[in-house]
Amino acid sequence: MTDTSDHRIELYLRGDTYGSYDRQQRVLGRVEDLEAEGVVTDTAVDASWQRIRTPEQDSRDEALATYEEFGEWASENGYRLEPAFERRQRSYIGSDAVHDVVVFPMASLAVYEGSDLQAVFPCADESGEINFSVQDCLEAFESGETDWFEQFAPVTVDRASPRLTVNAD
Image (cartoon, rainbow, N blue to C red; front, side, top):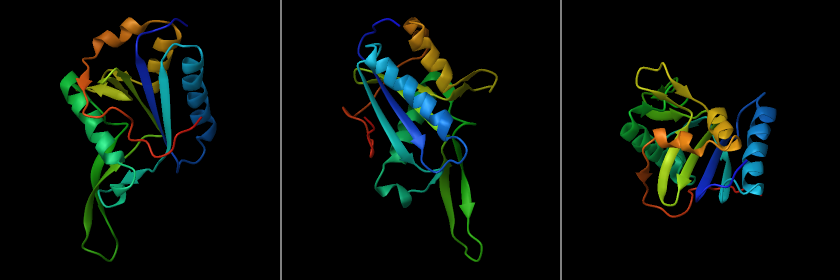
């Protein structure tokens, strides 16, 4: 692994997944190794995202605000967050209530360089033929191929720190 410029990784893990704990822990370990080796300058982890979020549920953890930020990046780059992230409507038996919801993936990762959001994983091109995974991102960092990230256009974000609710050490 080689040293990079001012890269920061934010890792988001769903807290309500079953049968994926070991996979999530392997991803977390790889992210922690990148920071320990000096490949990235900082990492932050939120392991409290839930599968489905509505605006009413999001008042505490800002998962939807982060999702919107990711969506802005995807739009600027000609990518989409689907199928890993799914936006749909949810209804309830015995009720006329219908809510717009976002279904979050088991793990997602954002790469920042300074105040710019450089890349979001997983993502796909508009056709759905080219997919980029969290694994692809980690492999690029681990192999020292940080120029791989140049295929993505950064988006300046209006925040200096992560919107994380739970930080792992």
